[in-house]
Length: 137
Image 1 (tube, rainbow, N blue to C red):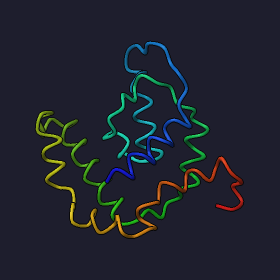
Image 2: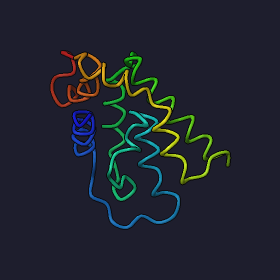
Image 3: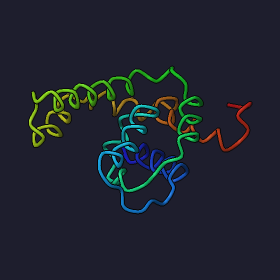
Image 4: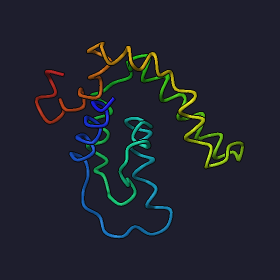
């Protein structure tokens, strides 16, 4: 599943702007905006999202380019992430158990199958079309 992190990291590089030290709660805006506008899968990347600022216009453009018709496997993964995050925020889940529980809940067999389906595997690549001519997306 190394293909997806590579695509997400590429999109991240396109929208990131170098940022100095972030203070307080405002440093959490970037991860929240990425999770809400594009995908909560960003929260699982091995990157410190809060250390950079992201161009909101570009994030909105990527979100619009990707559209609402996500493959079922991506929706299933995102739902599992959101449920675990809300459990953590509600105090129902210990932070140390979050990743283990999420790992247990993810449909790994379906994820493996999705890797062989081009439309599922490359869905996030659609975000690249905003750097090209949007009329062809």
